[in-house]
Each structure stands twice: as structure tokens, then as C-alpha cells.
Amino acid sequence: MDANPQGMKLSDLIDDERLFAEYPIVGEYTVVVDDTISSLAQVDTINKRIDFNSKRTLNKIDGRNSFTFTEDDRLSLIHEIQHIIQREEGFARGNNIKDLTR
Image (cartoon, rainbow, N blue to C red; front, side):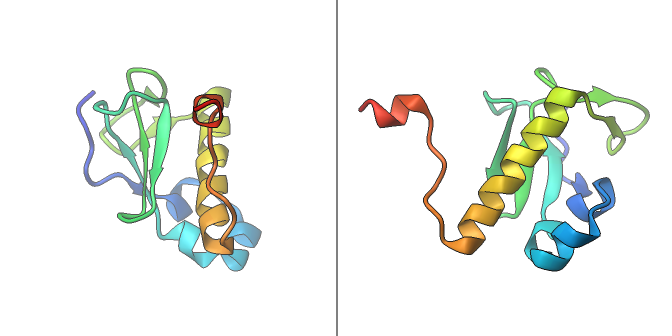
């Protein structure tokens, strides 16, 4: 699947009134398929995007903007939303074990 620069607004992809009421900025993010990333998913807070690598995740249905999410996809999406909220709240950035052992 090719990279999808248009994507889908997160607020159109998931139904969570409380999340969007508490953190309206989360609904402004676009979920984009980007096969150039090496991880399953990543958040880009500058461009308000959540990128998914379709080679590693996301089952495509019809069209460029229709996805079915596996449980791993759902968990990855929640993880990326967590990063957005952490940034909004001014919390420390998430790290991985490699960063902590340097």
C-alpha cells in the first residue's frame, strides 16, 4: 500500500466523546498510512499526524481511507494518543529501554 497523505481524521475514525471533550486537539490529528516508517505507528505532533505502517499493521478494505483495525492496531493507536495527551499535559516524553541505557 502506498503512503496516504490525506488519511482520516481521528475524530472520524474513533467514537469517544469524552476523549475529544477533554482533549479536543486529539480529534484534530489525522491517521495516515505511511509505509516509509520503520515502526508500527508513530505520532507527529508538529503536523498533527499518527502514521501507521501498513506493511506491519492495518488491514486495507476498499479505498485508501478505509481500514479495519486489529487488536494490535487498536493498542498502537491508543499508545500514540497517549503521547499526544502527554505532550498536551506537559508530561515527560515516552522513551524506550534503548534510550534509558545510553
